[in-house]
Amino acid sequence: MLLITGLKGKPVGKIASLLREESSTVADSLDVGSASVLAGIINKTSSAGGGLELLTTIRAGNLDDTFLNTFSSMLSGEKPSNDHMKAGNAMFSFLFGSKQDQLSKVITAATGLAKTSEPLLIRV
Image (tube, rainbow, N blue to C red):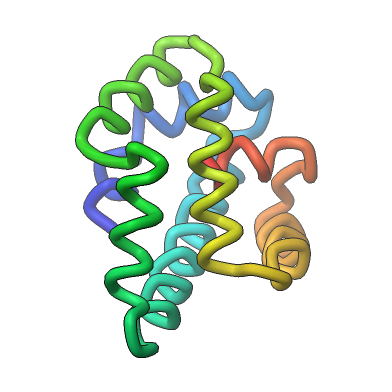
């Protein structure tokens, strides 16, 4: 949640501009999405071996401290790289499996975020 807190204000405006969405919609989507991701992490790590599996997925996707540097580049207007999108999709798939589409529908319905913006915002 620290990351989400750090995104409030000016960064949310930049994200909204890149997605051509309202800042309030992006802020709401970040809140709903981050709560969903946290729930997915808790769910995965509550099973035997889930913590190790999560760590393996994080390492395989290079979702370490370099992720924050890449993320700040995206806030500067650069598009996410294919590697970054693949890593985000892999993590999203790992956390939610067959429930990915339902979660996407919940996020877009709850916040008004366009369906085309959701993959970029949540998976990245």
